[in-house]
Image 1 (cartoon, rainbow, N blue to C red):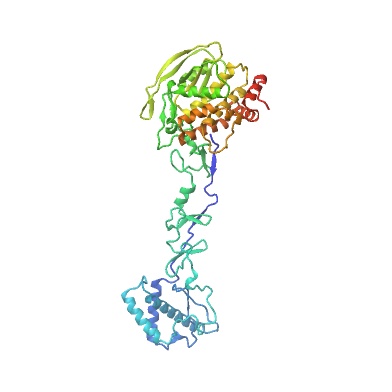
Image 2: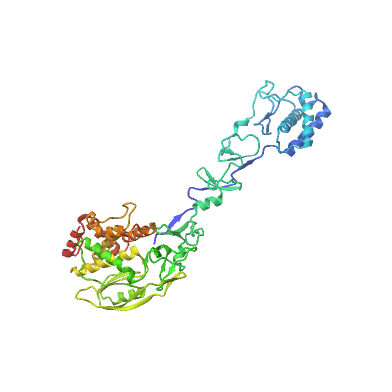
Length: 526
């Protein structure tokens, strides 16, 4: 099982609260209209030569970017405070009137009404006869200073569409301006209208979209993997299949495939074998479920051994059995080293009566039912090998890998290899299992440890048989890669450590010289 992996939802990610400046502009319409009406009332009472002109000292407002934003600054010369305040107010009111007049003249102005049109016309006529000069930014009658923030119409370029924002609402964020419809989520491409959003680098996201992208979901229950007490997202991940899941599923009786080790997802159903094991749908496609179906595979592996000049002189019986029968046979064996907690094959050396599967089970719902078994007495025939037992219901490539391993045990015993340590015997048997898988599986790359070229070249008989059967499906090929991965990365001292030592010796000296060295010394050559 893979070590726990941790994921921090805050790594490299900024969660922004209220980051946007949703622009209307400085003055609301209602406020400006109110000030306009006051100015008009004052204007018609005082006439064009009234105090609105400020005694000839004209200081006109600067209109910022034609967005109805007014900026005023204090005059350069000293005046009576009260008089100056009144004059500035008149000028501000005049600016508002001028601004609204310009707005009302624009087609499509969104607050425009019939009454406003009449008011605009009257306002324009009176402005023209009032003596105020028309708005002209470059005239010399303007004060010799400029406002601190003067924005012409082309100043704001939208960071989304890269066009001029012009008039209307805009949004300021991340040092840029946007049309409200152009500030969009980098994932779903819909506009972001919420007050909060997530930011990764310079890419904005809806908070929900960002969570969908970065927060891992459990591939068993399909929920977001919860955080632990430290606030980190802790999950389990299969080292080969990369299946991510909540740690709780290791203890909540979630079914696990007995072949590929993947956990059962909530939206799929695994097949239940009669001995309590579960089998996923992909492994079920090539599963071998009775002894008769397994015989062609068994003979092809014997041919593979003969192709490497390792002929088996004795016809060793081969039986497919249930888990209970295999466990009972293990108990009856006096010697031997077995892969725990689940042993899937056994080379028997003792005389026993074993219950084998004679008729394949049928599929009933999501279960395999109707299995027929038959007890069979196994006797020793002048050698130390009585039979090879393999669990039923496993995919073809896994069944073949188990047979290749157990046949190597038989070959060693028939050839007089005695008193080998578990690391040596199990290690060299795993090498033969790996070599057979390598001859069956088309690897995408040489990322896994390979056996010696000489041994691989001598497996022409198996390759020819494989080519006659036609190409394997992608699913079966991937399963074969997984079984090779299991052998190469086994953590046990005998099966894992023994394989790596044996494989290193075979790659360096070849299979035949390695076997000869084992016969003489009981160890691998260095």
